[in-house]
Image 1 (cartoon, rainbow, N blue to C red):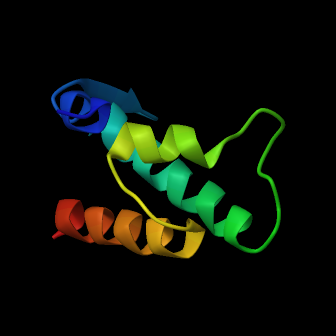
Image 2 (tube, rainbow, N blue to C red; image 1 turned 180 degrees about the vertical axis):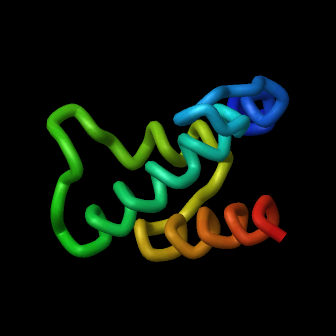
Length: 77
């Protein structure tokens, strides 16, 4: 079981709206991996390995981005 799956169970209040820590991390990670796939490191100390381990995905940055977007679609619909 990945940390992402565990965090889906934890509620989080973002600007007064209920969400989960996992959804917040997913949205931020999609942004960061999108930047990284274009050759921009999002911030110092950021590593794609951390994203892969958290979400349990594999592949190059483009494949990781596609997998993260699929996770977001599953949560939204």
